[in-house]
Length: 263
Image 1 (cartoon, rainbow, N blue to C red):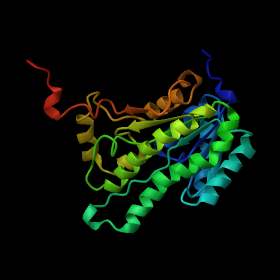
Image 2 (cartoon, one colour):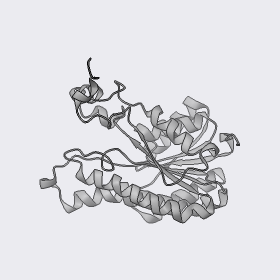
Image 3 (cartoon, rainbow, N blue to C red):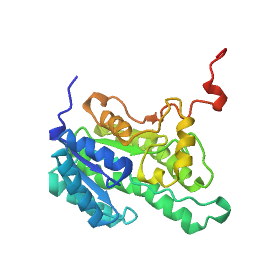
């Protein structure tokens, strides 16, 4: 069993300017990998890269890209190769989750979420395939969610559909890419403490923390370490799989399930 030398690896993290993506990018940079972070706003992406490099002492480059634009996604892959010479891991993390009741949802609302979360994931993976094939040990890790594949949440039906769709893509892609030695896996986070979650309000955070068996919200590093494992040489025999990282959030039938018999 080999031990991954991260200093020899190059990583792309889409949506790496904030939240889970930023946590993932920070961990890989701290381990010595060359990291590309992307965001829709180029100035924000470059600023985030500078901040991450300063925090970790690592090699981080920021690229502005709209994942809805196939040509822009192709250019992202080409720039990553130009900067670091190769790409070993693609972490397809970028996603949006606007809340909208189904009765009020327009076709444009649906298209926006599916284009970024699902179509953007597929375009990202497709654009990086030649680079991953040349690496000989390519890794693809998708950031899905418990919402959609496992649970539901009112107002997020389009988001849930996009996240469930990622897993349908994952399974077929894993079969197709296995002969090239490329693995494809997904992390399904529960509620993680990020800027987006904070916007839902303190009462929501307290309620969700109380509903999690481990008694706390997830942190971005909880997800980042899972991605790091799936991207490693040590996980070379794992493909087409999903790993839920939610502190047991999806285990109980109800709050009553927390009480042990006879307690």
